[in-house]
Length: 415
Image (cartoon, rainbow, N blue to C red; front, side, top):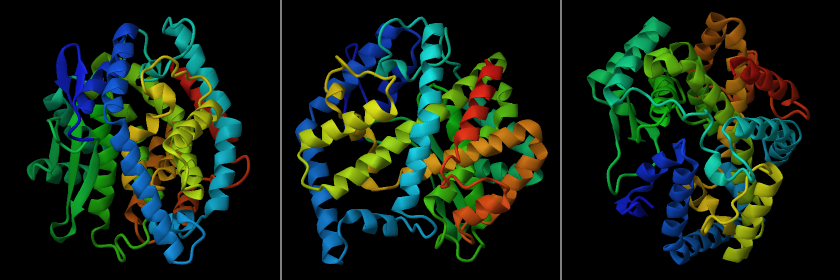
């Protein structure tokens, strides 16, 4: 995937650069971008299908050799999930479908009218939120300078953290050919040093790196001396640290976007709310695949399209080369590389929304609870951390109803 080239307007580029055009205010440009994406993936269709097919069967054989019915149960153990199981996720999935999907569909279709979109809301429309174009940050150097000011303003501890990151040049954010896609935080425990990799492309996603990935990095920095460090920190805990930091950065968005800070906050909230159904699809898809490992490539694609129709009914892929077949999942690298690592993001996003809503009422109190939660990483299980931070468990039936209603109201008030 990192080595793929996508041809767009006579120029070949990696996917990270191509997808910058998916944010264009010009609908024809967005359509052209997704057509280039589909054609580029289609050129490698057989290879993408074959790699995944072999991975599924290898994982299925692993599980059955160890005495499991299929890879699903083993996949959960590999993710270190000690506090919830498949039944818990099924309840959570039902909460998303019942209370979040209708709210997101309503918000996105209302916003489509403001964007002047007529007819079907297409997959290539889903990346744009603000009429006239989504806000763009002020540039790479300005992002780093703004991040330093932001973390200094938040607290003495976050000031010390960002100074360490800057002084040790613990970032690699420039896009280039053959570079690993996306963004992540890793760490060098021996040196007690976090490190952030990303692929800047001139969109608001560049700022998210300085909030999301820095949320991971801050937590790692807090927890280097915790015992046990990573033994019991599930990824849903780790993602709560990062996704919540994105929202605690809201008061400082003028440093990154100038007079477009309000537009960014609306875009950010709507996009992250929209993410909840998508992330649920990614996880549900994997359950179905590993419960039915002999699915053909065509059956897997039909399965994906069926989930899209259920969890993202406002979106159409009709007419988009290759992607209309049900192949959106093929550039979601977690599905290939880290099976079942995705619902963690969705779970964490619900906790992050609770922190956001709390911060609207009392920022200092909410931020204090967030820092306390982050410092306990690796020492307690996620439900315990939520309870101690005053947050609700999303595993109870109906647990997301109030959150969905309040997020919808918050978006309306920002708009």
